[in-house]
Structures are given as C-alpha cells and as structure tokens.
Image 1: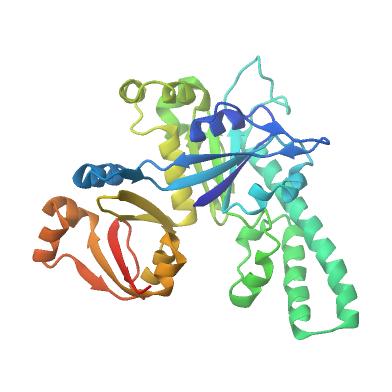
Image 2 (image 1 turned 135 degrees about the vertical axis):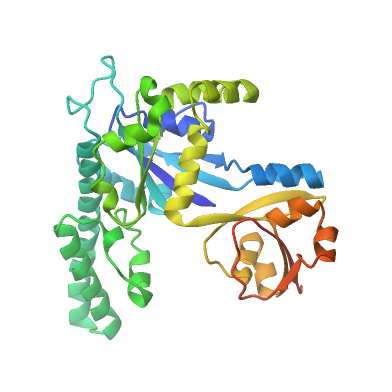
Length: 362
C-alpha cells in the first residue's frame, strides 16, 4: 500500500482534501498533552480495468488497490519538525503539500495574500530545517562514537551526513541529492522529510475548476517543479467534496457539466502514482479480482511477495496475460489457446495491467 502524508499551512483546505480523498467524515483529531495526533484514512484507487475484470469473472470480492493518507493540524511557521515525531509521516512514501490558490475573504490567509509559489518554498524550507536538526544531532553523536570506535562504516556515515548537511544548508531538499547503494541505505533509517517525493496539490477557486491546467500554469510554480521528484495537481477541494458525496451517476453528470473528465480523487491518485513511479497488476478468479500496486520495473518474484511472502519464497512460475488481450479474448482459456497466456520466470519484469497467476511450492 502506498502511504502519503498531507501537509500544509493553516487555511489551505488540507483537511477538506483529506475528506475528499478518504471519504472521512471528520478531519484531524488532537492527542493528549498538546500533541497533534495524525488522522489516517484509506483511499480506494479508481481503476476501470478492475471494474471490467470484475464484470468478466463475477467474483465474490472486488479488492481495489489502496493509498493511505495521513492528516494532522495545519503546520504554522517553524512546526514542520513536529512531523518527525508522527509515525504516519515518517513512514510515508511521499508528502502531499496542499497549497492555497483560492480566495475567500471569510478565510484570511495567514500571510495576508495568496501566493502559491511563496507558500511552496516556505514549506520546503521548513522540511529542510527539520531534516537539518536530525542531521546535526546524528553528527554530534557520530563525533563521539568515532573517538571511541573509529570504524570504516561510521566514518562513511559521517561523510554522507556531512554531504547532507552541506546540501541542506544550501537550501536544497535531500530528494535532489544523488545517492545510491550503501550510501542510500545508510539514510533510510532517518526517514528524512525533504528526501520524500513531493506532490503539490493546488487548491483553486470554484470558478477555476473548469480550467485546472491553466490554474497550475498561472500559479508561478514552474521553477519549483523543476526540482527532483516533485510534481503538481490541481483540485477545488470544497466543490469536489460536495460532488463526491452525491450518488455516483449524479457525480459523473456534475463533473461533466464542469468540464472535468475525472474526479479530484482520480487526479491526485494518478499524480501520486506518476510521482512515485507506481503501476498496478491484477489477480483474478471466482474468489476475488484484485489490483496490486508495485513500483515500475518490479521482477515477478518481488511482485509475488506483495501478495504473500510464502508465494515469493516458493515461486515457480508466473502465468501472465496482458489486460488488453484478456479483455479482447473474453477468457483465460481463449488467451491460452491463442498463445497469449505466457509462463514467465522470477526475473520477468511485471508490466502495468498484467493479469498474473503465480505458481508456487508450499
């Protein structure tokens, strides 16, 4: 399951977006002793391919892929470091920064004006400063440890963190720092916030809902979006939440009237998959039809592990057919007769839309 943490300054519509994405009835809740407790909700990934497969196989269960979103109270200036102590944000695969572009005299902007580029940069600076605190703390500890036990591993960790500190002090997020191999592994345990891929979600005026692409272009985010692992999408969270609460047929009609081909949920999910380089494969049968999310270029044995570690451990072969071929032929048997159902080994790279049955030894 993909995990994303929603961040944003006050009065951006962040919690409204959280409700839109997860169909949650409440926003954040506050923990005891003045600490903020994250609210976590799960979003079902819309996928017409799964709908079609479910209609074909008529299974007992239809199980879509899911994305987990975490929300907490809007961070003010200087509070991004608080996210370091909130597990759903530390473990998130990506951060979703909700940036205000709507104007509402009844909801004044804390900065006094609407400026998406300024707010995007300000939040980036907060993430960078939060990570710098973690780096400085660890370097202090390493200095002491190296005096006692100057191992090669500790020395290399010290060197990598010094590189991170220089990068952060230059105002650059760690997602733009090129590290690989063992050096990358050394940093994983820190779960740096600025190292996580970042999706900016521009929350626009109701009047701009029919021209979301232009709203993104006019937001002044061009330079910011040139950064590594950074993308953007646009929504009007308030009106799209109202639409999402309608009956499905009515919701589709309202979206069409607004000139939208897909819902805000669809746009954010699609942008998240694109940002993280994810795709879906499917398992089908009488018991269930299910979508599974995996990174691009995932080998078949690793994909099998998404279902169960025992399947990956006992992997023998993968029976694979492309979604388009299965839908065109109408059945797995017809695909087999036409040579379109293939047997693949553990190194086979799974493709988006593959329908797979894993053979494994118990």
